[in-house]
Length: 88
Image 1 (cartoon, rainbow, N blue to C red):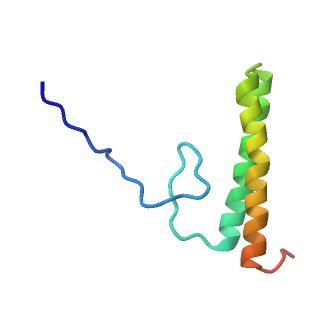
Image 2: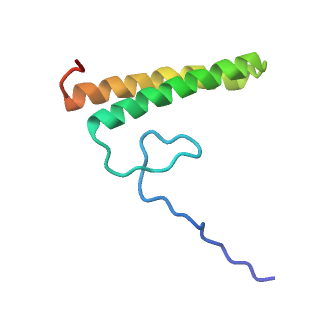
């Protein structure tokens, strides 16, 4: 039997720093857009963790609830690194 490895129909265009399953890779984001995206990612992770707790899936809940602050720390580090002006 002869087998070949099929390539996916859509190939990633580069690393996406805030990848969420099912999200599209967005190439050059501004620092403010990346910051907003990281904070949105943190909120989604927290909501997913709360959903898993309600479903009594404790291992999944632990993962998502511990992953949310990581995204907030990344957003904070990005803000310090890029030093863009504070929001009004």
